[in-house]
Length: 276
Picture 1: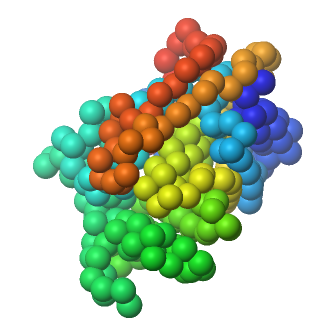
Picture 2: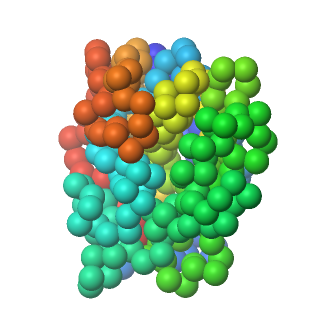
């Protein structure tokens, strides 16, 4: 089976068998009918994915890799907060009447700061440091800016990346304050695995480990039967995911820069309701 499937199944079993429900308190998220969306969760989940072995993509249910890439490039490359710059509609519920999600996600990565190396935004600072000072232990990005939280359509879930080079290998730690296992886990893991591959390639490095740290790892109440269905499925082997080696500029990558081969997956026969 895909290693991503193995990790996902282990996490889901642990949540359902040992997790804590929040049904004894009020919660912010709601289902479309206005019903509170409660969760069962585990705290402090840490997963590791070695990209030198395989690309982490779920086969238990179809993963829309190109759509996930589109969102990642919207945040890290376009540094945009306008949903018009995104091809999918995953952010529509969080946008205001102008089509903006406020000072969230890509907006934060596009803000320029006076770094010791000069004035630039966080992405350009990481790119510069990887090229010029790969031994640095200070390569940290953060989009959880407390000063701007009041102006965000949604406070960031995946909020921090720490990059570290060991020899010629680029590793990364993704910190996530909250994760909906059914709808977001596979999506975020393949996004940040792709980001690690892109940054490694343009820096003359090899992509190594992605470490995913999840503070609140949860399953929504209405998703429990769907997760139980996934637990009964037999996963497929991982596909092969490659990156166009001719691209040497981070801002030149597109969705078409990645090729996915031999991807077999299970399908869902029903839509998945999303809590907002």
